[in-house]
Image 1 (cartoon, helix red, strand yellow):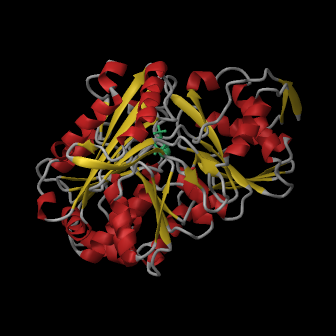
Image 2 (cartoon, helix red, strand yellow):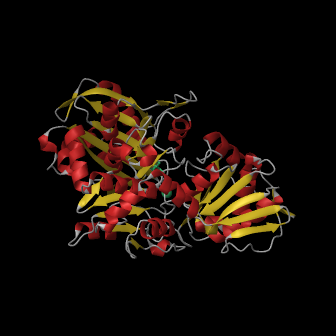
Length: 540
Ligand code: G1P
Ligand code: ZN
């Protein structure tokens, strides 16, 4: 065992998704080690507890696992569970942690590109399987900024490619199949026999793993266990640079899949997941399901999946997510929580059993089966619903709209705008909010306008300044917030939603339906004058 001098790193403040930086930053001497030592110091794992380790296969994943193993040994850890090849999807890691580990280290920068010029990341999840709370990550950052030495053992390179137990001194290293336990969990939640029958009847699926971590999971579950033909999963081999792509499952980055689903001879169902496997996009034949609608449809049809046959205790969505699921909750007579953006806000509600399902507009959906959002879980839920209802994706969503009404929804992202301009816009709008109440906007009346704050019903904490909301009398909403995950300048997000029930909703184009509200939002915020942007960077 060696004790090595390090330089403290003051820039190691993990965000809600862990510490995310360029790969080159992580390659600075002692950079990773400094952070890992700070993690071990704060986690202060008890003897004979288990630590789970795995990542999404990106550049530096393998090397980082070796470093963490050597440091775990030197820090008195006696049992680690590592995914074969150093791989674990984020939801699979969450599941393994929940099998009795004290915590886990996940190596990923989620949907950010990887490779020598891409990003790398590391985060710590606690014993419930969810991301460590802010108090923990703040303590890690504080520790990382002062730490002058770290402990590392002089171990040989540990073979990560062979499943089995290796014992080196006091450290037992269990290299496990990264997919098996997760696949079992999925099989316990969903009606695999019904999905197998659906596929056997000729239902065609395309799953784009984007050369990220879900490839092995999707091949095992969709092709081997559910009988989809070989080749159903495309880009299924995890690559350290994701094949040069941007592993984010949305209409922009998963465009090849979108083209196939909107083309001639399109499959019946298409889906994709992100770098670490927690996001999902759902497509039908020539049909895109917005993540907000996906959550609502899953909630409305949850009982057809065996793992949810008892019904839902409650649901939650992040504030900017459309209110489609609210209508379902009302019909089911269950609680519906509105939380700030970020998965961590669902943790307490899930742990307390107040909610079963939750989701965000940013392609994240999940349930109480783990404490992370889960891409393949959402895909399997949809397949289970399709198998039970014997309808196409489009028919299911159209019937949903007919029954519950339709929430038209769009998000505009303005990326890399100067921080001062973004802050100025938000301050201007925040100051205007009180004067807007009871005034007309886009032929509607403002009923409420505020800077969203959330009171956690479980731990009593309050989170303020979570986004500016303008609510209108017909159920429409305009929301502005600044992204917490951008790396350059500020990213301003504008979310616009309207609600319609009745026959008119089926045929209308989303952008046309929302144009009056978008125009009103631009005018209220003085966005063009303040940012110089006449168009958003991305429209979803
Ligand atoms: C974005 C999404 C948010 C998600 C987060 C992490 O955060 O909007 O829903 O939880 O990424 O995946 P933002 O950049 O908006 O702060
Ligand atoms: Zn992710």
